[in-house]
Amino acid sequence: MVNFRVRDLDAIVAQLRQANISINVDQQIYPNGRFARLYDPEGNPIELWEPAGRDAP
Image (cartoon, rainbow, N blue to C red; front, side, top):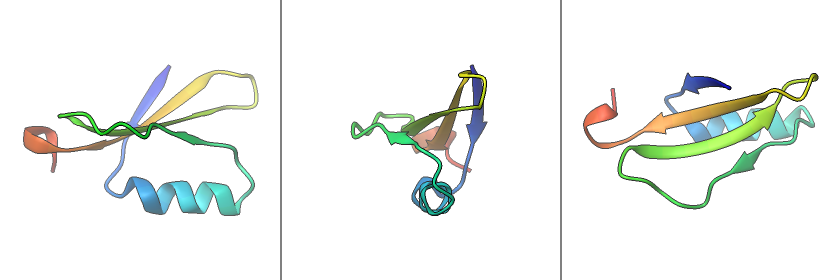
């Protein structure tokens, strides 16, 4: 899995959905942030992470 750190998960999710890319946002908020997952054309998972707490930028 590839994991990308993002500043604004909601904005990226909106952009991906506008481009008709399926993405699943984890509804649970963890101490270290929020996560969403999508898949590349070969089926490999890609995770987006918006850090929170001491991991935040």
